[in-house]
Image (cartoon, rainbow, N blue to C red):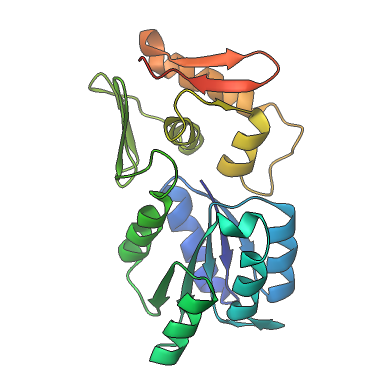
Amino acid sequence: MRLLVVEDEEDLVDALRAGLVRAGYAVDVAYDVAQAREKLAANSYDLVLLDLDLPGGDGFEVCRVLRGTGQGQAVRIIMVTARDRLDDRVRGLDEGADDYLVKPFAFPELLARVRALLRREPGGGTAILRVGSLRLDTSRVEAHSGGRELGLTPKEFGVLRYLMTRPGHVVSAEELLDHVWDEHTDPFTNTVRVTVGNLRRKLGADAVIETVVSKGYRLREDT
């Protein structure tokens, strides 16, 4: 899943990005309102971590603009801010945030809130995803096939997670690139094809990812 962190404290940004990448997420960063609006217009995100006190405006404005777009109806928003007043919490939720977390916070709690919101994705009702013999634990970042630990890289884990939330559906390489890789990835790269190939090899005899010619990839439901 691809996340956008909108935050102007560089130390906090570095810590959040490192922790979220270790948890298997692709992460982009915006340090002010202008960057946030630019990246939200150019990319598709599954979730946004949004500070309120930002150069060039505030998080309320970003939230309001995002909710007014087509993408904004689907993306999850967590406001992460030092503002702890009741009226700020109420306003944040009224402006369209899905959750509101006050700084300072424990990173495991932030991760749990991220997972909880992303479970609203199709097929993501719990922290454990299951399709046939495949079992994926999004909290521990572990994947098993028939009880065998797969030992996936973060990108392999991200591809499998995305496909497992959409079993039986064709997912294009472009969609995987949008949701599993960050903004620094060359859009003309063959990294999706290579990652899927490596994932298939790790699945071995249990490989269940089909290539649909000229369309993308599909995880078989009858695994």
